[in-house]
Length: 108
Image (cartoon, rainbow, N blue to C red):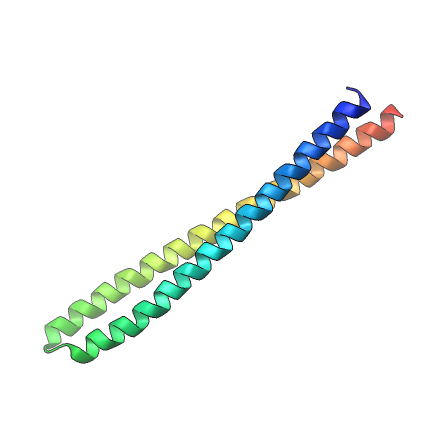
């Protein structure tokens, strides 16, 4: 490989790193949206529990709230996993750039 082709490969890899950084930003935004929805649901469930007329209704509301909270937890963990995966990719891309630079040094 020529030095120029290695440099082009480095540039492609840098663009891939930037794309992963954008993905991380999007994942963080999604996590914040999930947290906002959860906080809104907290208020909603508090109102529902206050307005509930029977014990059975309260139990039903609490059970639904528990299911929703588990769902929110799964969604947040999913986003965290996506962020971790993107960080691993970035690390691998940086290692690739490092190897490319070493190849350039050997060629010169």
